Image (cartoon, rainbow, N blue to C red):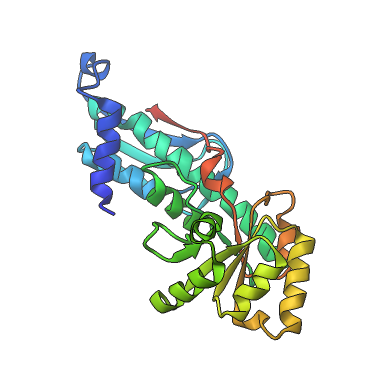
Length: 273
């Protein structure tokens, strides 16, 4: 990922052929600060710094990525030509607000999971905003979660539509084993979970399983001597209210899409001193 290129793309999208409002200002040097309007976790401040640097401004970070923030705290100070700072304002705040929202939600979920089962990790999915996946995933990591797949080339993941297309789960597993040491299979029944584990699938996603069904699957795999040979991932229907119930089942991974596709942004503002 070429971060500087992406930042240039963000700025170009917002500025267009020029910030015509800022162009009517006297282009004197000013100083401004970005202030938090809510509590949460800061994420993306390094990228915000790069946004202002790309426009020839000087910045000083006062709250690093991963820091807890309260209302009305300064997270970054910027100085430079007024037109340059103001033309960056919305781009910087949009990215910071989105990433901080993702990190804050992630941190809250991770804390809930770890309070029940320290060995279970929270994973993000590919349900991200087009063009923002790198930044969305970075925010998840800052919040204490893990990335899972960034792109389709990262790992073979056999899902329902692959099985429907091929017509045989067994055949797909055999093909995957020849290609990759680590791969994942999505199942929606206990029978398929046992089949996948028996065939040596290293990671099994239990899709839309209730906590009770997951617990039954775990118990069955233990009885067959297969539980320790496979990682289990819970996915589907998981939210902040029931995530502890999923953590109690003893799965290794819990993946949620809403932290990146239904972002609750953290509010920030830029104030000229």
